[in-house]
Length: 85
Image 1 (cartoon, one colour):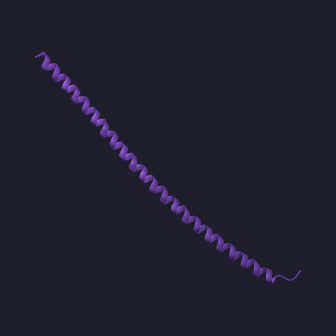
Image 2 (spheres, rainbow, N blue to C red):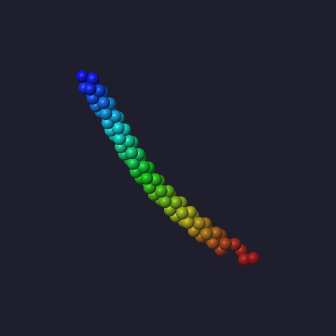
Image 3 (tube, rainbow, N blue to C red):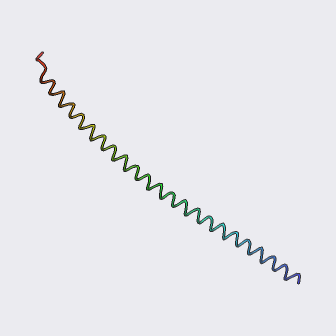
């Protein structure tokens, strides 16, 4: 009878060890998948932000270019109206 009790205790301890091990593996897998999902979301956000920055840079560049051309033309017209030195 003592042998049977020892076997039960060993098998229960083995079961508990396997259970804990599988629980750790499951938790690790969940955390790893969550981390991968977060990295993927951050990469997408970064790409979106880079695209928006490019769009704004082009818009500012184009507007600044148009403004400079307008100023250049206005200065040219004013220069034509000036008396000869």
